[in-house]
Length: 98
Image (cartoon, rainbow, N blue to C red):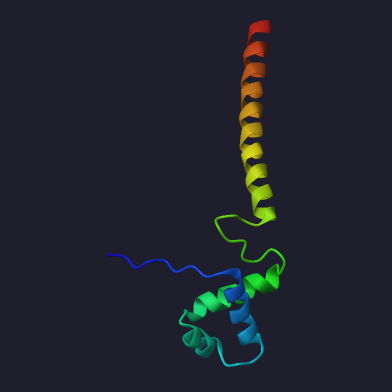
């Protein structure tokens, strides 16, 4: 059987990064003390540094910029399909007029 996936609150993640940045030990030591992996703590630190206000949204909700990016990608696909249809229609009508 697989292991259960652990989830942590935003407050826990912020506190873990705070312990790390205050110099309470190395990444490995702080991670060991908290019972998490060092790579996870490093990722939390990086995410908090990149966008402190939007870090750790939780509950499957992405950051605002990710939602906008998904919307724009869907719109891009739709517009490309419309463009391809119009190209084919123009080619078809130009053949009929000759």
